[in-house]
Length: 469
Image 1 (tube, rainbow, N blue to C red):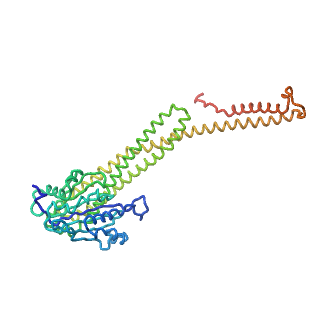
Image 2: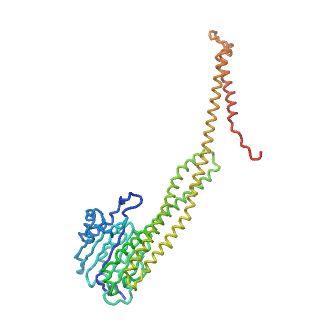
Image 3: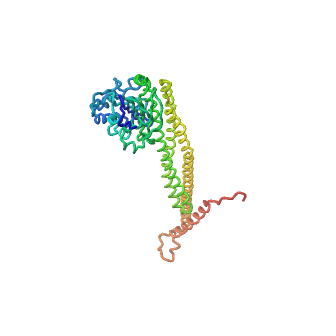
């Protein structure tokens, strides 16, 4: 049956839950990250696109509220919810809705709902709730990701709930978007008595993952329970934990890839190190000094990636605990016929797959840290030994020259005092060798040579004796 063109829904609404990091460990406790307000600025853009002046004014209202939480649940605005109504669309449809900006611990959360307050709306008209795919991740760009929740009551009887949910997705998103993003139904459950379907495209990045819940109001109790809203805060907190887990997993994948690159660089340096074995000592010495300048920086980055992997693992584990807490709270407001197994499945995925994958990555990468340290230590030891040899050679040369010249000067002075000084005599070729100055120089040169030879022999390193000899 072609539900898209034949079946209508009553009072359809599409809610965007978008999550933006406000604080992180790299900054001071109360200092927000640079792009913390991006999610509010996106609301401003959506207000211009949808023709909703009140939505355009949201960043200013938040600034006037001084970003202070006004309740334990984290609402930022004094009036809590910013409502807008009577925005005329085609076919006499009027768009209305509300925005609820919230601060949850270190995160900004946006609850933006667009609705048609009409008892009968064609599925083909649902595009008015998401014109030009404006609510998709590629346009919102929330740093921690987002979830879209569609809630509506089918008009009339439907034979195939899954097919009807697929038709709702086709009404909300363009056919090209569904095809390109490969959005598909992953799970089915039941919330407040009515069926709920989970769609996703399984992208690793939270800014690319298109997570969509289609919630069909088919039970007599669902309307009252949904309006009562006891499910709201457990659900939004659960979705925030989910987004943080997806984000941490995405960052862990990036860290692992970067660490693998660094490890690959280390393998290249190992090969360069081995190739130096037969090179002249001067070339080897210069090459090792170059390696000592390059390897420590890569090693430092490598250690950073391992540390970040451990932090992301902790983030996933912590948010998995919180996720379970909010899932239990959500179960407490559900009715007996509800089935939230699809939400439990994600928790199992986080702990059994995401965490275990990081554990495996760390098991492979951690030995590389020791290899970096060993290589740096080995090269530094070789350089230090060679430098010590050069220093000892220079020191020996200085000693030999000093002793030689010192001894030569002393001998020259002593000899000169015992030679008749006859500077008044006329110097000729025959008597030149007997001149005191010449004799002094000759004895000085001879003494310098002798003392230098003795010093060279005395300071000559002794050969190491082998064991047992």
